[in-house]
Image (cartoon, rainbow, N blue to C red; front, top):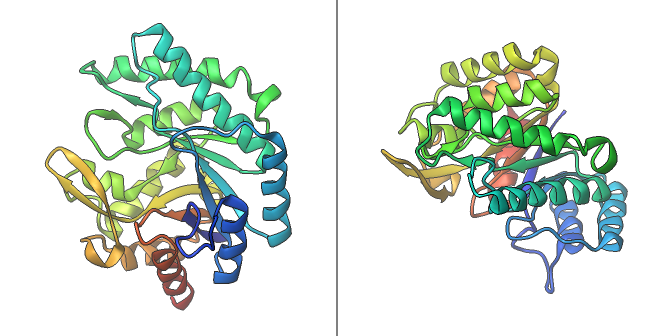
Length: 274
């Protein structure tokens, strides 16, 4: 099954809002998944996590998490590296408590280093993080995201290499890949190549539990600028849905459009009509 997720609390959630109210609103809208946006900080209230978990399970809503942006597993600064690893671990641990299946992470900035050196630094940091899996997040996937700027760690090949080594799977964002490649990765042929490479690294069975993001996106020759509503972008999103349907891709597709639930429902409804 492929579930379409809203990226955070729906805009139409009654005030005062919050994740629990957002889950209730998503259910009323017919949305069956949500990515919790802990992009600024990770909450530490375990009772709140239990409430989120119970609500999601009762409503039948699948959860993923987006970890804080303030992460760089390639930094030479030991204090900043330790803080980055701690933020990732906090997100994974709280995701375990609230019942989320996967945590999306922006792993690193390149800082002018050669790609192979960046990959090795990220790999070493990941090794440190994964030592805590059994104790802190036994049921949660660490998903490094494909990124939209060439200054960031996050080509499809690199996130697949690290994911394979540690038994994880990445967060695949075709919009980021589209921006990073200055307009490429926007056709059925390229998306099929993307999924073929995914299956080559992780096995065809991995295509049954994919963590994906999608949206319209504004970009320059340097890569991503910001997300756009689907119908105000050059994203061939209908063609992407056809690829998902034809290949029977399963998992979660998080719609990161600024319109949140409107474009999530647009993609979900179009997918059901195919």
